Image (cartoon, rainbow, N blue to C red; front, side, top):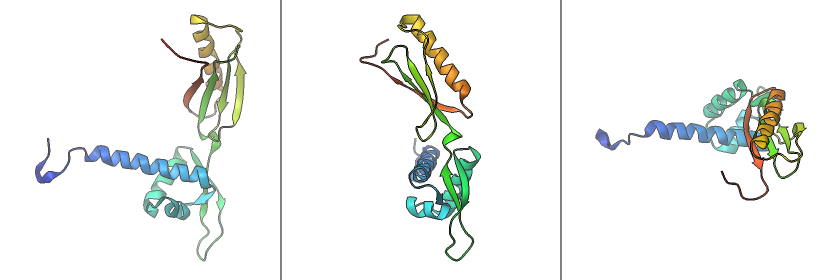
Length: 160
């Protein structure tokens, strides 16, 4: 139901979507170009300096990026450089195409931090599910920060 004056009622959702998009843009630029200053991020992303600074502060507080020193000055105060903190989050990768199953804990740069091999050589059915649970729990237990998700590699078609 449109409000008076032709305003759309979904403005809050659009604002949230824009904030998430800007956050992804800044995080991707740090990943691609880091170490990088906030001013360089603003130029690279086309976002305002205040927006970049706010997003960078949030990413720092969340442990996704870290301050890694000072850049060279262009006449004023030297800029503080930001870089992705590879240990700020983790992902779990599970390969079900080999026996026993193999799994790994990966940092944000995709480097293997810990790898684990299942104990059952031919897991199937309920045993396979329990083996996966044990393996993933072991990896997540080794993580020093939250895991973002789990990815599975499977050999062929997957069904229920």
